[in-house]
Length: 147
Image 1 (tube, helix red, strand yellow):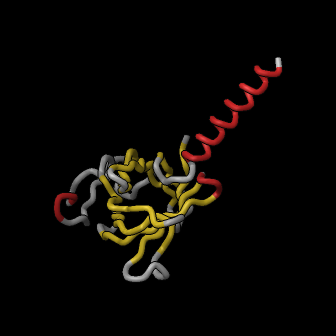
Image 2 (tube, rainbow, N blue to C red; image 1 turned 90 degrees about the horizontal axis):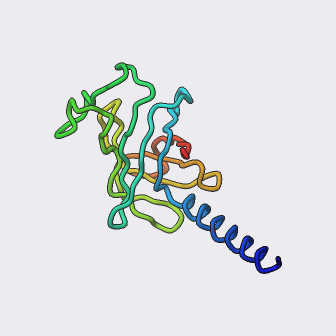
Image 3 (tube, helix red, strand yellow; image 1 turned 30 degrees about the vertical axis):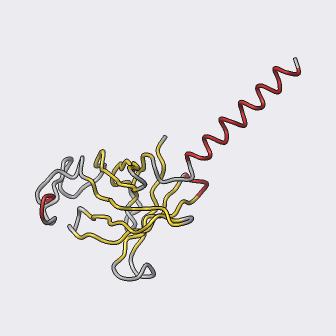
């Protein structure tokens, strides 16, 4: 009976550590929360490729333009393209406890900002800080991890 208990304890520690490790990175699916209204806006999936994070809009939950908005104010290849399926964050790399060095697009105004990501609430929330120039200036949204 004792070896079975030890095996169960070891498995619990292993899986608990793996679950915790998954929450120490922004990789995953997030519900974006509007920093002005406090309402959910979209579902964004953050993935990692070659050490860089990128974020893609999976679903728009709320929009002034109806259920399937397009990026009217965007420039270049994103101009008038559907927001759903659009990569809105790219080039973000880890720098200690934060991720930065990349860009984030606000599809509402078509502007691109520098971005800094910080994990909150044991990895269940993500502070997404967009800024121009210095990180002290700008605005933040807190996104919620989806299971």
